[in-house]
Length: 585
Ligand code: ARG
Image 1 (cartoon, helix red, strand yellow):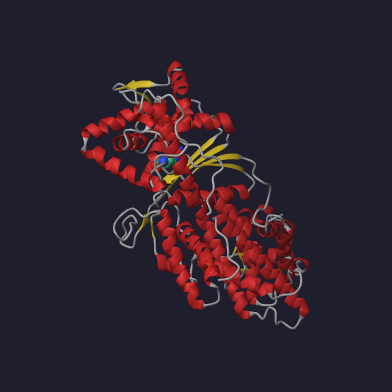
Image 2 (cartoon, rainbow, N blue to C red; image 1 turned 90 degrees about the vertical axis):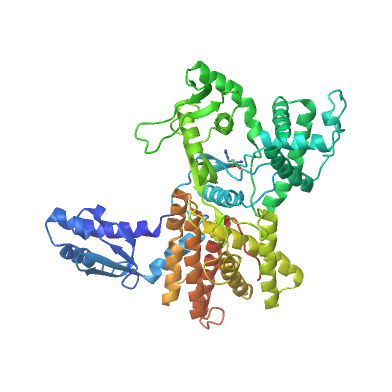
């Protein structure tokens, strides 16, 4: 399906050509003065230079050729040489109807067919899933959906932090608490128990305790370090314990992400990169890519023209230990082998941007990744409380995601119950749906790189630039359509008969342009901004129009077709954002 703006450009280009000018001057854009016109073309200025004529003369000649056009209801030349354009209502309606009949109204042109690995979520096992990882999950899920909408094959990998010292800390602490467990008995040769010796809540208590202890207790810190080494060498009992920690944590994570409407295709983690490290280092060593620096093995990655110093990428420390960068580089090796991706996209806090710059350069320099494979890091800001500092619970602790969602749900539930339209059961379910929309939209509507303030009341408001407002708009259309007896699929969008109907159709026609921008920039906030505008156009239309009570059947049917499509467009947008609308609210 061709975009409206491209069709308009073709029509104006033809008029330029007919008048004897370069058709390339016929580029049409959405008007930046909607009070004066709907679209505009500024091509008479460059055409005037080439023809040595006044721009207004050329604009006049082109406008003359656009009179009686099947596309424009008015084409006006205004000083100093602009072309102000308005569309014919029947032409616009036919275009929007064509969109409505297409499978993906938000995509013009061919599907992209890249294979993309999306590294997002990135929670650390055995630590509670808190809002520090919330943004990665929310933004990543949306980007995944946007990429898929445009035809790409996306492999979403959670990339768990499941290896290293944090595991050693837990094992060392367990050993102190329950020394008699078979996992710590070197002579034990039997089968280990199937049940984990801890629950998720215990596990979540063990880690912070152990971590705090290691900071004051040197002996314990040493034990934790040893436990980490034993685990990394796959010492039988330790490895079995690690598997328990993984199983218990992953089950809990899955439940949490499900509540948030976030899902991953692959649940790999740092531990999966381990096996790739020795052969990778060997190859890099053999090819002379590793250099020695104060006893460490590094890849220098500074480049000419760097504006700030980019330190070498350290892969092996002087004590032989490998680092975060080593794991990430080895993970790239694994991903290249498994998926041959055209692109790998990472979503983390922007404080990790130097790390990724180093890893990406190292990957390219060492040929682990060919030049044609894109490596991109999207760094986001933090979610702050109203005090402008990173968000905390009322008691000052790190907020758990579960608690956060429950808090928003409670708040929304109270509001819905006040309206008294839903049963308590439906109210709870609906509140959950709205809470997810409030939280996600509150996050996604900001430019990712910026910090934002979590504001429960504002995010959950049913009016204003919020997720619940979009849901409310969709629910409103659903309610009208539920009272329409007939099949909207059999109807067609009719020529607009009011400013509001035309404005809504023009807004719908923008969908492919807006979504293409969101895709190009990996920017869910562009989807939010568009959905908000669209919802505004729907509500204006709704307030100005009798829809079901319109006596003229042709008009009524045209309205029903129009709002049916508006509902679908809004639903596709919120699906790209990773939430959905309830039936009623
Ligand atoms: N687990 C890491 C953290 O909590 C995030 C992982 C991001 N992905 C990656 N490939 N490094 O900071």
